[in-house]
Image (cartoon, rainbow, N blue to C red):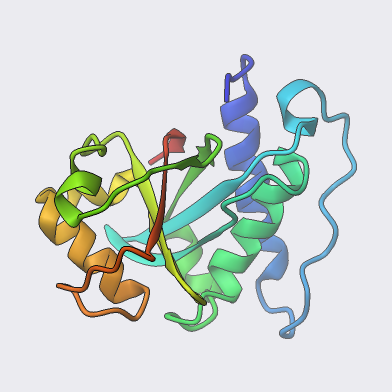
Length: 188
């Protein structure tokens, strides 16, 4: 997750370019990422999320939890997806671009967290530092570490994450799986 000089600005520029290329285009897959002289960490497989905010409010957030493609390509595709495929929002309009803030989170590897109770799980999380993935059968959801700013209470953080996964906020099962991770934040 180490950055080389200029890499962060390059990734933010790449994300904005991906979004700009989608403006006014019909609903379709994104164009391929530009084949420029990518080097170093940008060519290494990495998982990222791209978060879009407009006037301080969430406008889209999409990403992957596992590294399956080079970082430059992951950011390119996740920026497009955040702007045009987040099911919570309509496609981004050209009129929104000037007020759009872009943040990129590059994820560390997922670390399994063994917990027999909600309290045991919470005891293994550092608010503000750890993101969390919860899964039970086909239900799966994550909160990035940045979500702690709006949900600073650990119990509420976990309850809202369970709700995001389609589970009751007060639900607990020994069959639930959890993974924590950290991020390197770029932008915003």
